[in-house]
Figure (cartoon, rainbow, N blue to C red):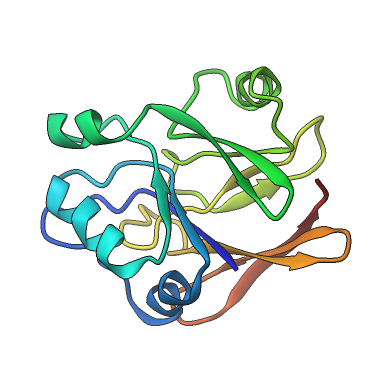
Length: 169
């Protein structure tokens, strides 16, 4: 399983609870789309995850920016993801960002609003925030391999499924 989180906004730890904590611990790979805030939070994620890839966000300190890139490309089960915290002019700019990286889908954060847009040229996935939802539901994304690609869902820490989607590689 691939677990995707973003926008932790903590100075102490990962703030993972319930299904989100379980999904991070069970995942083959965890992607964080930025805004940890302090290095201790990044350390806490790395300690929980078997394999971890992240990018820094606009609220991350210099130590995080020294350790993580602003954007990266991550492949999971044949699906290539372009990962960033934010790109101005979304969704057009997010799609261009993904195309530049020859991606099958884009993962991004910043808005704290969990959502998946599969109606454009590239699927756009925002896992929301598991810790600081700012008026939205707390959430993360989980993606499981299938014969045709990946089956995904947006899930709250109390295991309520907000939305489901599929991706092909």
